[in-house]
Length: 160
Image: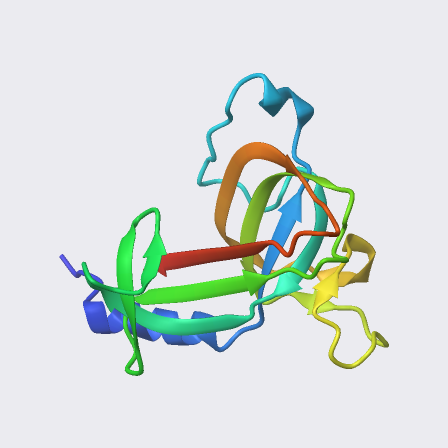
């Protein structure tokens, strides 16, 4: 039986890293406030997307108990050579959907935005998305309310 090698997984990480990567966030479902909802692997979109931001940085990393990258799945160190771990950071701006209630977030690869948007724009509302791309990772969490006084940041390490 064939197996997917670490170098093969690194090749997949290289291919993902080469694509546009965005974090979409959404208001989800208010029923989730009463009972937590578990993510399922068959989902392809958010329930109620509010907007999405291009990745601030995408880098290769490796597990390291003393690493400076700290996420719920462990600690990692950035490396220059390809690995099967991708560190992704997303910094939303103060003005990104400042009054939204957020309950879900998803990492998308291959997002295509509509033509004619300003050069350098990195936050997009649903009407500015031509094709959403592929949902790579999904997380649901207790609701938080956006504020124009807070700059939200998200960090993920995706292991392939």
